[in-house]
Image (cartoon, rainbow, N blue to C red):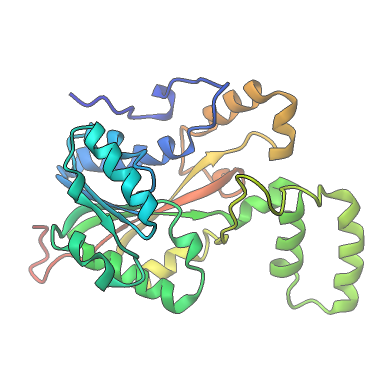
Length: 285
């Protein structure tokens, strides 16, 4: 009945194609849908609609919104292709509840997924508003799955991000006289021109520390907050070009346990799975 893979090992390991990072992230979503009997899901930042088939094939009624009109059109086209109601996908921004009122009217929802959304909302006040809006879209006891980019992964990349993390985060309060010595020593050791700063396919977004983010959800009133790592790397990314298929096979093997402590350093992204508070009676709907 359920055609969605239930573990990393069930994803076909085609190591000649782009790495299916989000497919690994969605394991947690579809597993929770099965475990809880969830019926509805809203995707924030639905994009091209690439995840619609995954969620719909799990038996979920899928809704979504995006702040880009072109992406909304693409999602509606994808929905029509899958014979899903295209009007379930509309324009809206998670930062402003008035803009997604059309989608909210179909809720509240059992599950919410937001991939590539919070990394583009780095400022504290808009981020708090976004998390409040996540809660408003969920039923009491419903689950949110929110993606973040992992800043601790920078310690394993040995590139410009490593330099920036050490200098701007780890050594932020160290005297400049010491910082300048460290900087001069680090630069020749690291791939400072990687990754590219601009160009086709380069998207700039913020990083978050997985040791700090759970507190944001607790402060926003969520419970059962869990960190799930995905998009593992078997080596620094710039080395993958030496053996693309071999690297991807090794990365694939690491995805099996997203709770592993190694994910804190080897995974470039993580999900926060968090539960909306129950209603006053302590029950789910």
